[in-house]
Amino acid sequence: MNRMAPITPVSSPANQLQPEKRDAALFQAAKDLEASFLAEMLKSAGFGKSRDANGGGIGEDQFGSFLRQEQAKDMVKQGGIGLAESLYEALKEQEDAQ
Image 1 (spheres, helix red, strand yellow):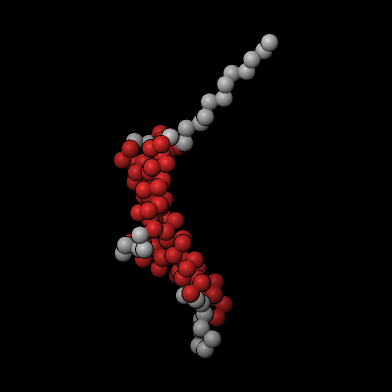
Image 2 (spheres, one colour):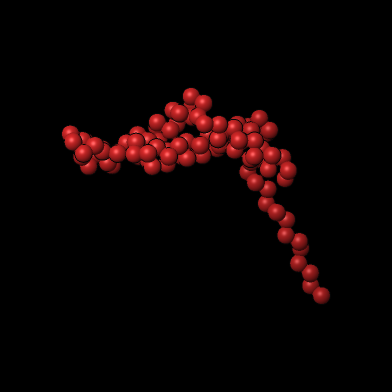
């Protein structure tokens, strides 16, 4: 009977990095995710939406998402809402378990 070789899992790129670089990459990913979350919250709150009177017109509408994203990144740099730290700890725990 012809037996196939067992399939070995491919290690994730994060596991191949040195621990310090891996932790920095995980924390950056967590901060990016928090910034994306905050940008969506700002969008829901109406931040960056063109005003009805004396607004910037179509240009303001088109670039409002960039404004929200940069504002969210700045919020994360200032400490954010703590989401990045929670995500980082969860990601680190998951990576350490593998």
